[in-house]
Image 1 (tube, rainbow, N blue to C red):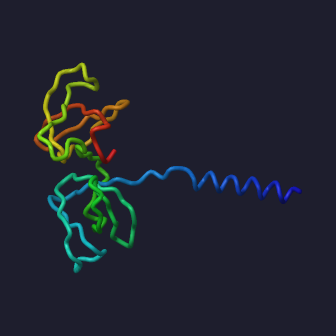
Image 2: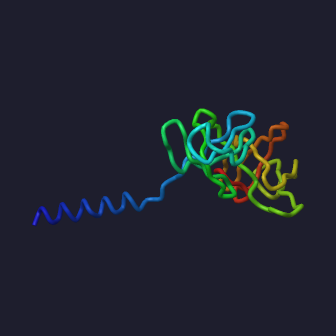
Image 3: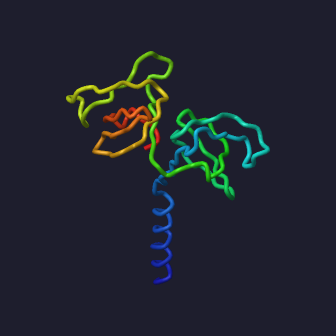
Length: 153
């Protein structure tokens, strides 16, 4: 009887443990340009290049290499040494349009607009406050963007 109770508790614990959502690690490009490759080695074909700060989700690890996925679901391999834990995010909305998102003075739609950004623009993440993210662009522009407009958080 005790064995059955212990087995049931252990089974329940394992079920709960493996059903918890896993937070994917997001890193960003630390150099000026890095190559996304088809295989985890420098002899493989280059699929794409990413610029500084571009956020990438880690989906697999193999030695010094990580398989990554970007906000458009493109995936491939990058050497881990070329990535940084400095948080960055990218504008994920308004693809194929000329619409820009607002960058605001504070974490509210009631604050002034200090800038605008197109789909695919990368920002360094400075701070998070509820559903807002304080960001800095490489141009020096700082402001707040609603988190639902960004990928990589």
